[in-house]
Image (cartoon, rainbow, N blue to C red; front, top):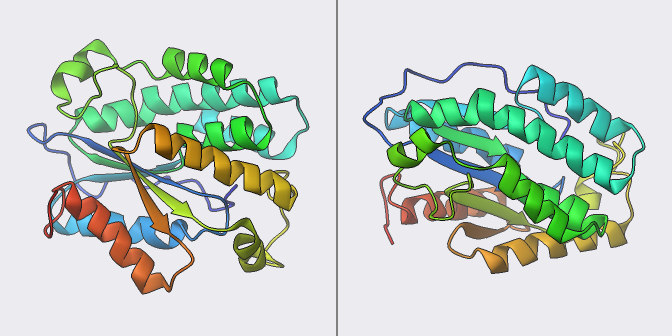
Length: 243
């Protein structure tokens, strides 16, 4: 999991209640290069006059950051780990994501629920049925938000409107991270664990292809950014090509 500091800065400008909020998540194993492009995408939206909230999971609120510290450092069984992830997510949704979307802002999060299915479901082999149940409980869209959010899915779960999945072979990610910092308990896992994590992401992508954009992260940085920008432009949210 990323060791980047928690996003604490306010939105770039005041949200316009007449605008529809957008929720974009960046996903992928550590070393995939997500953080190199999150700020650039935020800047692209700011240049169009949009208010942007940058955040991360696990984390994003004082409570969720405390839970993050526990999850990344303390030994626990997979169910406890999953429960803490979703507890942090619930607070994150209530305190940050839903209010920002209601203000018409663009929310960009470094990871969301797909990471739980990838790491706890794929990596740990935890029961996907339990994860789906927790997802339904925690991510129910508030009734008022449903009417105000033109992008809200019909099943009434709060999901990102677009998920940018940075797909990178685990061995390449490991080489990028080698010696960069002391690994947390996830980063210290085996290559086999991360192969299962990538498989977990692939499964989520296959199940919800309209939400996902797979980004080949084993490319030069400028090519990766071009793919990120094209995926957002294809949605019609930034100037450029549209779907």
